[in-house]
Length: 376
Image (cartoon, rainbow, N blue to C red; front, side, top):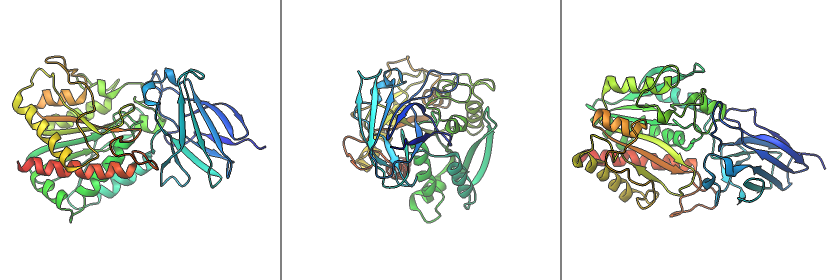
């Protein structure tokens, strides 16, 4: 029987082929450059039309987040438009931790990924289309190590400075799907939520903070192996020009509200992390965060407050993390939005799990919640 072919030489591609036997393959993840992080995968399989693929990704107990693999179902697409889920099973004891993916493609080509990829080409389309919209200003905040632009879109006539930024961790591609949904709302002159926010706010949107890691197929770091979300206290051109460019722009504008958009490997829920524990914490500012969180929970069943990260004790906040640094630096209502790689267990979707479509719908609810938050 002819062997299948596996290839990861694509935008955000990541896999190592250890062996292939017919329609079965043993695989491993490639580490981020100059880093120990590994979790993201994205590759294509050819030669499997009508045959059951058995793909075993091994060594996962040594991945960045081994707790992310139990109950995880791999993403699969045959047209790179609709992403479903393939039957997947994790065995922590087999070959250092093995995820076995089984899937029978109807056509000769199938793509597999940790989450639906958001390519740099799609990113450029997103930026170009938004920048051409009425009332939108484009800014290049700086350049990455690989020379890619740090793109920022700005709009709105209001005085309150609102910052939204995503993909500090490039493998968390759901964050840019969220951004696509947000920009569809904000750039539509007929959308009532977008109209209200543009009237009341000045909005600054950075859809991809880490273009190098995105293109290279990294989970968590830039081209130098640096975790950008541990650089906000002291960013530098040498290590983290991306963060330096964004933080400098924030210093110019000031920040009243900020949302850093992410994905979480292990927790099967959508949740917010706040800035409890910063030296400048006060109950009035904290109440603004809790009020926003309560509005979002009321607006959409895809959001909840029971699952999430532990609250940081008083005075123990890590100021190298953007949400904490922005809250402390500007006295801003700052937060991290987390979406799952798995599914939302409170409202599961067996066909797609958490999906690009749900990311975009959540973005609209986040913006609608902000409009309501501003009114209170």
